[in-house]
Amino acid sequence: MKKLLLLCALLGFVPAVWAGGYANTLRTTELKAKPYTDSQTLATLPQRTRVEVLARKSGWTQVKTATASGWVKMLSLKLETGAQAKRGDNGLGTLFNVASTGRSGSTVTTGVRGLSEEQLTNAKPDPQALQDAKRYVVSREEAQRYAAEGKLNAQSVGYLNGGQ
Amino acid sequence: MKTKQTIFMLCLLGAAFSAGAFDFGKVDWKKAAETVKKVQKANAEVNEPQEITLGEGIASNLLGAAPLLDNPEVQMYVNRIGRWLAMQTERPDLPWQFGVLDDSDVNAFAAPGGYVFITKGLLAQMNSEAELAGVLAHEISHVLRKHHLQALKKGAQTELLSDLANDAIRNKGGDPRLTKLVSAGTEVYARGLDKNDEFEADRMGVVIAARAGYDPYGLPAVLQTLQAIKPGDSSFALMFKTHPALADRLSLLEQKMSGPFAGLENQPDLAPRFLQALGAAK
View 1 (tube, each protein chain N blue to C red):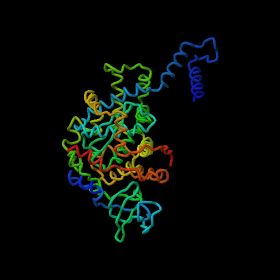
View 2: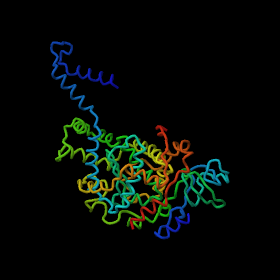
View 3: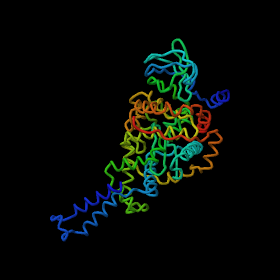
View 4: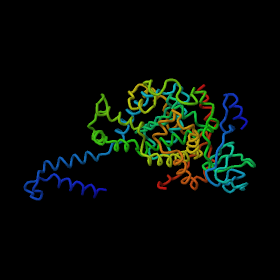
């Protein structure tokens, strides 16, 4: 954790996990002491309880209510509009020069290039760019090495079936 | 399936008979044989090399619309993650190629044959490698299930697709029919895929990310982040228009994920590595 903090300080990131933002419960939701189903239930939050978002761990979100803090199922929350501006601000927006609202640079239809509906419909091929992009393709071995470096262990998990 | 096709063929043979249909002396056998041949051709499926040729054209168009982000480290990083994910699937040996587009719009694209692109605008919304993996795995699923080809079939491109399947289209030298098919394939991005194909890619995406050893909740976390974006923000317009409502996608994922992923919640999200890798973009 200390390492991450240091890294963030070095790179000038504001990590999303510590940023604020608010969310509302979509339904009656149990507030747990820890991010586990069998953890102690601290309180039962009624539907539409407004909570402050503190962090996320896998399928759980750490929240603060007026009286307590704990963990709720991530998908029992809906973030408030604009909460993303904080929660999603990983610092990369500024890094990549992505405008916070709308497109950076030219407007929708004046530019020839861009990913609007119209621009995609009229796109001209750039085979050279595709050829150039191939130099970043990695081998299976390299992918495997990088996964191992991140301590990622392949698992056997079956696809989920469709329907409701 | 075979029986159905045979019955269908017999019916067509019937249709090929002249007015005195059951007077076998008057059967136009030549015409009947031609009809059968035509139907066989129309039913031919695009094979893998043909799929790749088509995807290459579409990917080339996409790069014509938006250039690749000029950052080798970030491009390599995304390829490492993408390739590792693809290795956990039923089509590990496609020529998988991943890329980040230098565009502030929030969107991601898959083309037949193994081409996957995300915009830097979408990348900037993410918080961890598991979130990136979730999005890439969603796009990989579109390729695995050939959703793009399905959309082309629905978009009345059946004839051109069967020409491609029957090698009637030259894949080099700018055959105008290939150009037309590639254009139609690019237009699919403006129109969107089938809603159920998007839901399927969500369901498969979380599984592929989990197989690769990541926290499976990366994809829903990104969708939840996007849900909090102000409606009317133009950089999200096309993604919102071409995908089912985020609330519906999240609620379907919630129903499906609650049980099977219980034991996988401690898999890493590699947030530090993500921030570090993208920090190289400085």
